[in-house]
Length: 145
Image (tube, rainbow, N blue to C red):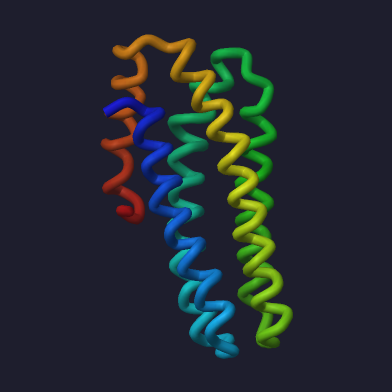
């Protein structure tokens, strides 16, 4: 499978998790329930980001795409937001910060997907498949989606 297809597929799966988390925020006032969803979301997003940092961003960087460093910085920002979230116990603050993490990640996905589209235009099929195989080989060593 091509790297571009893999990343876009994972974004699709993660977007479903975003929607379910947002639904839950509206349906409960339990910080503990939200904390469980936030923990799952954190694990999924951070392992996805780790794969992107290892496989996707170096490829983007090699195409002289200046967004690679910015995208990596956004990964660190999202990781920091999750760390700050873990210290909160107040429902209003917790849910507000979780909404912001989701919004930040969605905007990040849009920027990545722009770069992925460009990547798909600039690399040939063989290169895309080669990088896709690398992603697929690393995925089982992390949290599977």
